[in-house]
Image 1 (cartoon, one colour):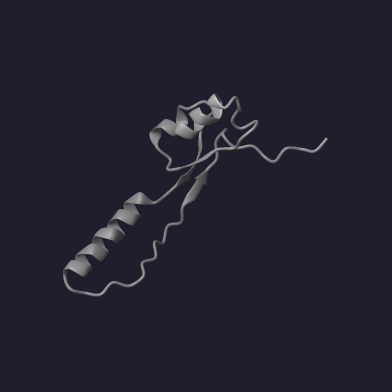
Image 2 (cartoon, one colour):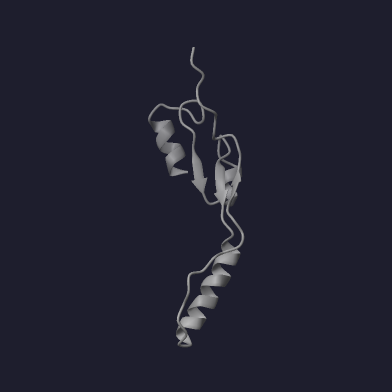
Length: 87
């Protein structure tokens, strides 16, 4: 939301002049003007994997690379526009 405000304060418009994508689809993204396009992360799965790894390390096991099976997703809203057309 700070970036949205900074764009506004600079006299620019989202998405007319600047496209804006947030990293976290929080509840406020639906209520900004324009509504924010966001990357949604599988935080519940990430947290569960982090607890499993921490528990394993605290138990004396070595830790391997971790792969989270759920990919992030892009939630398209009004804060992104296509490239400008040339005249």
